[in-house]
Image: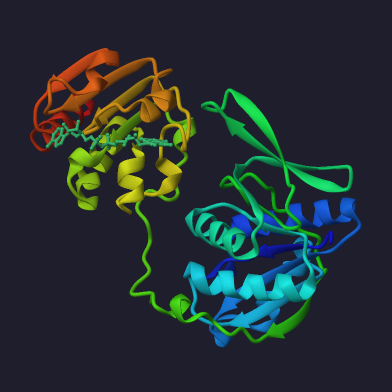
Length: 325
Ligand SMILES: Cc1cc2nc3c(=O)[nH]c(=O)nc-3n(C[C@H](O)[C@H](O)[C@H](O)COP(=O)(O)OP(=O)(O)OC[C@H]3O[C@@H](n4cnc5c(N)ncnc54)[C@H](O)[C@@H]3O)c2cc1C
């Protein structure tokens, strides 16, 4: 069973970039295994026209399973992938990363009694089977994960797999009917919106203004964006606020996010947990604003300001603007 099934996320008439990367990676691996790479898309029928679906072929999918169902939710995709994989005998499921991929992959592994490996940065073929590589111990080592189960689930880190397009190639489309589990239809999509900070490239910034739970709410980031704008830097975030949906995962610093070493790291409303520290401790200058004088972040800051960030950050922004002018 060497065929690979990739979940292809779509939004507003386009297939997600990480999903395209996973399809290309799936095609490469399936080629080495002597199998095929297939993709699965799920959504409203009119959101998935033939030409959109067939473009997955240009990235390496030989066949695309198109299922009609609720869009953007994990459990219906678990149902659809489990149905296709059971019928098609696929040996592996591959995801390009992102929060939805984590949720679907974990649910699928439970459903199929499969082994699962997350945060995968590379996959190779060894003795006719896939081996996933996953950084561990704060990314200082790489673990090679072998699958003992008959089905393996592989969930990549964001941007781990590169999308490569072969112009002109298209995939055959197979429409599948999925009977959803009653619990899979319990959740509904209320609204979808742009996530603040999703397009930032924080690894390249010399100055980072990072925000944590001390900001109180998503809108608290507006003042950090103003300060970062005045300083010519970018905005970063802790996992606590990313998990709360206040800021994009792309901006997360730490053990399960990015590692950065800017010239200036200004932390506002961040306690300084070890999992955050490992991602920013290499910064040249660390400045922390926290209302708790005993916050751990002051133990590794070059400059500490004890006080309410809501008062300090706007005044700092004004001072920087005045100086620059
Ligand atoms: C396996 C694992 C992996 C993890 N990976 C990461 C990771 O990659 N990145 C990461 O960041 N975390 C990670 N965490 C979570 C980490 O342990 C902390 O929970 C998280 O970093 C805390 O985020 P925070 O500092 O925003 O929130 P909190 O710890 O809640 O701190 C908020 C701070 O804001 C201060 N504050 C409140 N109001 C104000 C105000 N008005 N003005 C000034 N200060 C104020 C408070 O005094 C407090 O110190 C991970 C955890 C685990 C278990």
